[in-house]
Image 1 (cartoon, rainbow, N blue to C red):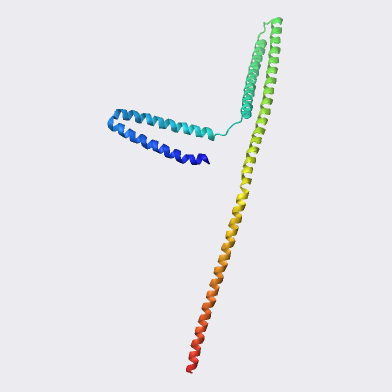
Image 2: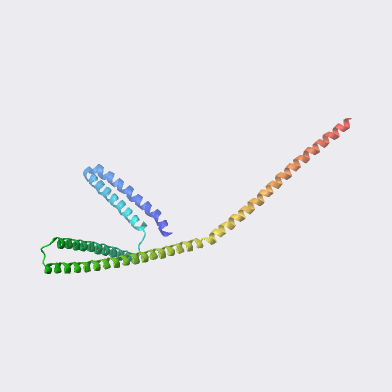
Length: 228
């Protein structure tokens, strides 16, 4: 409530500053035009900077706030996915090296038994590294899935808390709404009573009007009868 009340005086104060600044610029322009242009450029730059600052501040306050827990989970989730991609790329590179070495070994007809044995040993070691990288990638895949589930649960809990807060606010207005409904019902009842009263009075006037006509007709008939 105080912020709303303060907006009026603040706006009036800003308006006074603006008017004063414009008058000052007009005076400076008349006395010393170059200085007036310089002050005008400075004031324009300040106004633009103030507008940009306020827009940035409003956007920052209107943006949904992310909790520290959510930030931490999202950071870990991003790291898990990066590690998963890294190990999958390494496994792909290792498999390419294995295929290359196998092709070179198959084409080397002059290779000795020792050279073939060393080549097979390197292939086995590379395949072991491939399996290890594949296992690491699978681990970080599972890690990312678990973190994603945890993040979704956290978002659900925050949504539940926000909806409960909204529900509390709605319930707090129920008594006021009930009072308004009761007040409206009372006024409607009073209006109905007044309308019934007006209708009854109108009906009575109509009946009275007909009775007067009948009395007038009776008098005229009596007058005619005496002339017979």
